[in-house]
Image 1 (cartoon, one colour):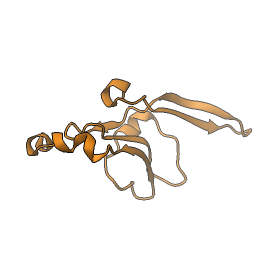
Image 2 (cartoon, helix red, strand yellow):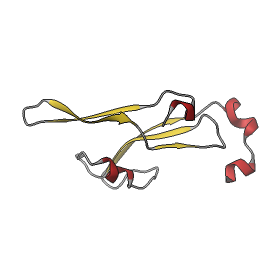
Image 3 (spheres, one colour):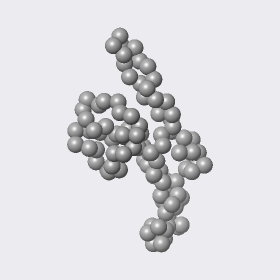
Length: 103
């Protein structure tokens, strides 16, 4: 995700884990790359920050999380953390057509 795509600053995610002595260490530090935009609704953005497939959550490699399905509901026993930006109607309503929604 870049600032130009949404007009907003990129969302940064820092993931840490505790070691056996209770100290945290960074596991991953970077921008959220699982972002969905909607050309029919300028300003709309859905960023999937985190998805787990179990509780308690286990840190998984980025590639495994990226392969998890994009659904509204979390996997059975899991969770989803998503940030959704919904622009005001005035920002997109007059530009929305049946053709743009189908595209």
